[in-house]
Length: 112
Length: 525
Image (cartoon, rainbow over all chains, first blue to last red; front, top):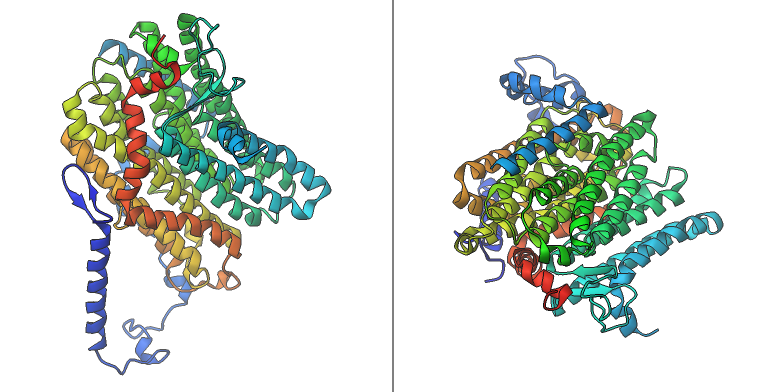
C-alpha cells in the first residue's frame, strides 16, 4: 500500500493516520453541531468573567515567551548555570573547545 | 552543442552554471538593474535543474565518474599515469545525488524569498553573487572525488557564508557573528587540510578512491581521521564544535540561514564520506562509531536544552539546528558502529543509516521553512525578541501556517516528514542501545515544548496594538516557503517512496565502500 514505511521493527502508514484523524475531526464536528445554537459573538457571552473585575487590555493578558518554562529552567538551574557560561561569545574560547575536542577524540581513538 | 553534449557534461555544468550566474550578477546589477533579480532567479533555477537532472541520471544509471580534461570514455585512470587517476574527478553516487537534491530544492526556494526580503537593502548584486558562490561550494563538496578539491569547495562554502552573514551589519552583530564563524571554520578547515596532507604524503594521491584502496589503520591515519571528524563536525555544528554556529545563524539574513543549513550539511556529507567511503574498509572496532554517536547525543541534548531558555527567536532556531544535527549523527553513527557485522547491519544498521540520512533532507526542508517563516515575521515587525511578539497570526495567516507545518515536522509530529525519519532512528537505535533511543525521544519532546512556546509567543494571543499595521509578506516570499512546505508534507505522506528512491541508494553507496573504489579505479590499482 502506498505510504507504508517498513522500519524493520514495525510499520508506519501516514495516509491511514490522516484518514483516522479526518474521521475523528468529522465526529468532533458532528458533536459540536449537537451543541447549543444560541452562541453570539461580540456580545456579553464572549466576555471573560474575572470575578467581577474589568477585562484588562489585550496586550496585558498575552502570555509572553519569558513567562513560559521558567519552572523547567529553574529546576535545572545547576545544569544551566554551567552550560550557558560555556557559550561565552568569545572566539578564543571557541577555538579552545575545538582543540580540546581534537585532543579528546585522538586519545579515545588511540586508547580504545 | 546539442542536448547530448550538455547531458554528458552535467557534472561540469553543476559548478559552471552557479559560478557563471554569480560572476554575471554584478554586471546585470551595474548595467541592467531592473532584470538583475530575474537573472538571479533564473541562474538559481538552472543550477537547481542541472543538479536535479544529474541526480536523476545517477538514480537511473548508477554512480557517475566525470573526469575533468579527459576525452569522453577514456576513464578515470589514463593509460600513461601509472595506474593513478591523476586528473580531478567528480564521483557522484547515490549519496552525492541525494545531497544534490536537497541543496537544489532549498537553494531555489530561498532565492525566491531573498529577492523580495532583501529588496530594501543596498548592494544586492554582490549579495546574490555570494549566494550563488555558496551554492557552487555546496554542489562541489558533495560531488568531488578529490580531497583537495573538497577542501577548495569547503573554503568557497565557508568564505561565501561568512560574507553573507556579515553583509548587513546589524549594528556590528552580524560582522561579529561572521568573524567568529570564519575563524572557527578556518581552524577546522586547516585541520582538514593537515589531514589531507598526512594522507597525500603517504599515498601520493588526493583521490579518495585511491586512498581508500590503500589505507591501513596506522596511528598517523587515525590522527588524520580525528582531524577530519573535528573539522567537519565544526562545519556541521555538532557539539562540542558548535559554539560559533548559533552566533552566526542568529545574525545572518533569514534566507541565508536557511541555505546555511544545507551548507552545514555538506560538512556532514564530508564526514560520512570520509568515515565510510575512505576509512570504512579498515575499522576493526565500534570506537569511531561510538564517537559519532556521542557527538550526536551531545548535540541533540545540549542543542535543545540551550534552545529552551532563548529569547531571540533566531538564536532559538539555531540551537535547534544543532540539536537536529545530533539525530543525523546518531543514526549514521549506529550504522558505523556495526559496519563490520553483516548480521547487525542487516538487522538495524542499514535502517539507522537510512533514518539518519532521511533526517538530513527532512531537516533541510523544515528548518529552511522555519527560518524563512521567522524571517517573514522579522521582515514585517523588525522584532527578534520573543518577549515582544504576539498575536501575529491574525495578520500573517499564511506565515503562521507555514511555521506551524515546520514546527510540527521538527517536533516529530505525524504525518509530517520529521516523524518518519525520527521513527526510523528511534526503532533502529533502540535495537542497538535503548538508552540513546530514549534520549532521542526525550529531546523530541523538549523540541515540541520549545516550539509550542515559540508558536504561542509569536502567533497566538490577541492582536497587539504595536502590530496593528502588520500585514502578510509579499507573494514571492510566501512562494519560497510554500515550496519547502510542500516537501515537508509530501515527504511525510509518502515516506516509503522517498526512502526507496532517494535514501536507500544513498545508504547503499556509503555502506558498500568497494563499489565506490571500483567506480573510479575500475578493478583496482
